Amino acid sequence: MSEDAPERITLAFELAALERLTDPGGVISDTRGWTDHMGIVSDEPTHLVRKRARDYGFNPDFLPGPRTKPESLIKVNNQPEHEADRYVLVSADESIEETAESAGWEYRHVEEAAETAGWRLAAETDDASDAERTGWP
Image 1: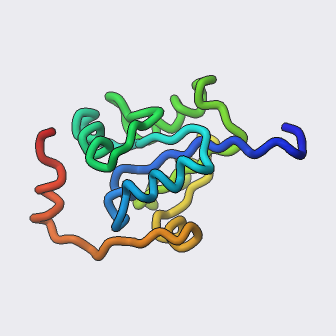
Image 2 (image 1 turned 30 degrees about the vertical axis):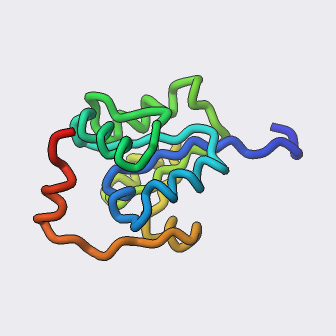
């Protein structure tokens, strides 16, 4: 990469991190302005992840497919169509930090990312509203 060339970034949102934001659609629009590739990783079934992406007006460059979050991170990092100078994961799951970093991703907790980027976090929700979010598409 030359000094004048912009840095290429592939960014993955963990689904739970997107759901912690007050305006996931706005965050996605903002993020599209400075990333080259953006998608979602989750242990949830793909059809639920796809529905949440649609709800946010998001057409992701990659989805988890039938694999775990760590498997998704490794796969995306090894795909030439998502090649980048930096791979960044925004997650609400601290237990994946070490795995993400060993797979070549920079880990950013959603609270840290929100503070840095000026995104607003939603108030904590109760189990009833979480159940409502994960319904069938």
